[in-house]
Amino acid sequence: MQNALYFDSEGSQLRLMKAIKNNFAVHGLKVHAFVDHEKALHNLEQDDYLNDEPTVAIIGPEIEKAIVLARKIRGLVPDIQFLFLADSELSQLAYNLKSPAGGVSSDWEIVDTGKQDFAGHLNDKLNLLLKKRRFRTTLSGINRSLRKSSKPVVSDLNRYSVSLKYLAHIVEHAHDGIIATTLEGVIVKWNLAAENIFKLIASEAIGRSIFDIVPGQWAGQLPVYYRELMSTKAGYKEYEIVLHDAEEQGQQKQICDISLSLIRDESQQKIGVAAFVRDITERKISEKVLEDIRKDLERMSFEDGLTGISNRRQFDRVYQKEWQRMQRYCKPLSVALLDIDYFKNYNDNYGHLGGDECLKLVAKTLRKFTKRSSDLVARYGGEEFVLLLPDTSLDAAVQLAERCRDAVRELKIPHEYSRTDSCITISAGVTSVVPNPSLSPNSLLSEADALLYLAKRNGRNRVCMCR
Image 1 (spheres, rainbow, N blue to C red):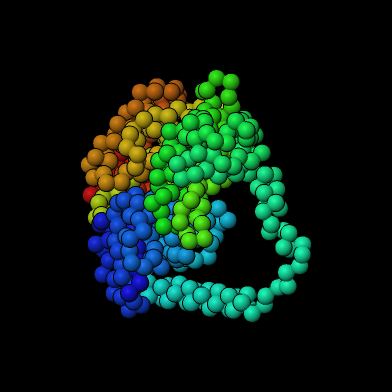
Image 2 (cartoon, rainbow, N blue to C red):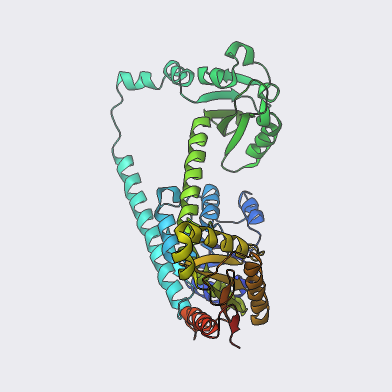
C-alpha cells in the first residue's frame, strides 16, 4: 500500500478524516496525519521513516502558509503530488499555485471542503491527480526506451571532452565556487570562483580544514551540515548562509547558496564532499526590493488612501473569511455600522479639506477600539465606517459602539450646522449573529444598515441594536 500525508489542525482532521481515509483506501493509499508540521518534515528526512516514499500530500484548510509547506515537502519528496483542501478564497489559491513563484509545478488539485458532497468531490479530484501521475510515468518509460535504443557514435572530440584535463578546466573556471574536501573536511580542491567568494587563494586553502577558514555564520554551522549530509539517503543537501554580516567591520553582507554532495568511489563508498557555492547577494537584494514593493502595493490595495484604515475591499475580503470561521466554530459575529451625523452640512460649510480632516480624526479614534488582531475597522463608504467584531456578543459590541460614540463626541470637532449637537457626533447600528448555512452573509450587513437608519431617524447621536 502506498503512503499519503495529511497536514492540518487537529479540529479540521477530526472533521474531514473519515471521508479522506475512505477515498484514499479505495486507491490503495494509506493516510498518515500530522498536526506538528516541523516534526513531520524532520521525520521525512530520515531514510527509514516510511517503507515507500509518499505519493500524495494533503494540505488542509487550517494551514496558513499552504504553498510554503508544499514547497518544503517537495524539497524532501520531489515526485510528490498535492491535494489542497480549502473552504474559502479558492480562486486566489489557484492563482498563487499557477504563478511561477508557486514552485509546485502542475502536480496539484484543489478540493472545496464547503461542497455538500465533499466525499464525492474529493474522489473526483483524487482521480484526476492519479491520472496525471500515471500519464507522467508512461511518458518517462517511453523516454527511457528511446534513450536505450539510440547509442551515439563517440568521436575523438567527445572522448577528449570527458577527459580529466577537460573536466579540470571546467571546474577551475566555473561561475560557482567549487570546493572538494575529504570526509573530515580537509580541502583538496579550491577553484577560482571560490577564491573570489572567500578572498583566499587556492595555495593557502588546500590542505587546511574547511571548518577553520570559512567566515561568518557558516563557520559554526558547517560541521553540523557535514554531519547531516553523512546521514541522508540522497547524499545531497542545500543551505542558504550568510558569509559576512553587515555589522562586521569593513565587510558588506554576503549571502550564498551552498550545495553539499557526497563523493563516492566505484564501489559507492563515501570518499569526500563536494561543495558548490553561489553568491546570491544581488539576487536577495532584488528579491527584498520586489517584496517591499509587493507589500506596499498590497497595503495600498487594501487601505483607504485618506484615513489609513482598511477600505471596503479589505472589509469584504475579511468579512467573508470571518463569516466562514465563525460558522465553523459556532461563534457570534458582530457588526457595527457607524455614520457621521450631518456630514454633508459639515462638508458644504467647512469645505472639503475640513471634511477630510474630520474623517481622518474619526477614523483614528475608531481604530483605537479595535485592540484584538481579529477586529477590523474600515471605511465603508463616504462618511460611513464599519466595525467587524468576530467572537463578540451583541452586548459587548453595543458597549464598544457606545464607547466609540462617546470618544468621537469628546473630540469636540465644532459643527455649528448640526441639528443634533454643537460638535461632530456619530450614529450606529449594531447587530450580531452566529453564522449558519441557512443565512446569507449579506443579511447581517443589511440588518446593521437598517438599524443605522433607525438611529438617524430617532434623532442621531445614538446606537440602535436588534436582539
